[in-house]
Length: 264
Image 1 (cartoon, rainbow, N blue to C red):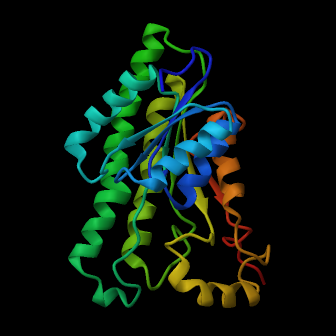
Image 2 (image 1 turned 90 degrees about the vertical axis):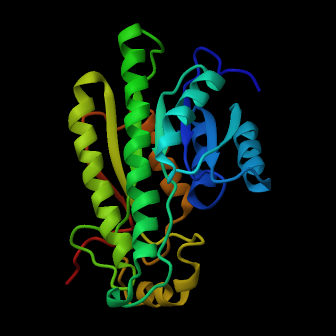
């Protein structure tokens, strides 16, 4: 499909072919965006995500990119601009889990390094390249839509400890701090950055621990007493991308049913 219409903003969503990303993509289209559906490989899931965007009235382009290959990320952003003509929002959604849930004394360098490469290093440099292009657009008067960068971290950061996913939580905490640094750098130039922290949500990452999480919810660990619905998180991200929470730049938005609250 051709470039985005001049009055319709474009969002790049990483990890958009499955899980939460496949829900964010049509939500963004429903909220007025055309979407670059990016994922690790071109397959039926990527095409299904593109079709979901089109059903909601948006244009969609599937672009394959491995976030761990940081030397390719500038070229990826360039391709997105060449394909769409503009980029108004980046959603850093793609992520990986740990190789094995268990004691942190058994964490392997391979699991730690993969989490670092995909959950932190890749988003850092992708954000850098997108931000540079957004700043150039601002200077050149290209596009008048609100500019935003939304990064998905996790409820398992700061004062919440995931005992069996330590490398994941450590890296996601760094990702949240990354967002604050980008927010401080970019806010004055009209690009707002947000950190979204989902709680328990039904994806492939949590499937192996469903019984454990069901038990925690039954014990009142989540005040809302249920899992998150992916649409709820997608709606939050689309709202942020449309400037619904201006002047909250650099903030962490907890979409966790109250999970982070200490109840007594």
